[in-house]
Length: 143
Image 1 (cartoon, rainbow, N blue to C red):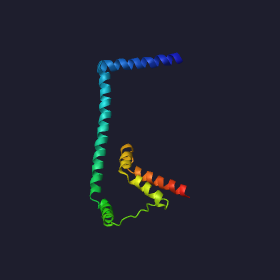
Image 2 (cartoon, rainbow, N blue to C red):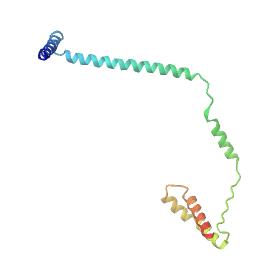
Image 3 (spheres, rainbow, N blue to C red):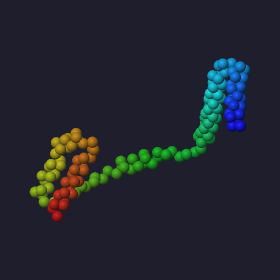
Image 4 (cartoon, rainbow, N blue to C red):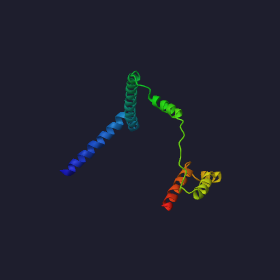
C-alpha cells in the first residue's frame, strides 16, 4: 500500500508539471518567479508609501504644537559667566619655606617646561596635573 501511495504521489506530481508546461509554455517558470517577485516588491512599495504618508501626517501635526526654545539657558549662563570677573587667588606656597618654594615656583613658571610638555602630551592640562602632583609630593615630604 505504501508503494502505491508513492507511485500515485509521483504520478500526480509529474502530471501537474506536464500540464503546467503544456498550458503555460516552457518559460512559465521564469514568468511565475517574476510575478512573485513583482508581487512582493509591490507589497514593499505599498508599505513604504503608506509609512511615508503616515509619518508626514504625524510630523505635520507635531509641527503646529508650541514648544519653547531650548537653548535659552545656555546664552544666559554664558552672560553670567562673562559678568563674573573676580580673580581666583591660588595659594602658591608649598612648604612655607621661601628657600624651597622660590626655586619650585621658578621651575613651574619656566616656559621651556610648558613648551616641552605641551609638545609631547595630548592633554592640554598636563602642566596643571604635574603641578598638583608636585604639590602633593612636597606636602607629603614636609610632614
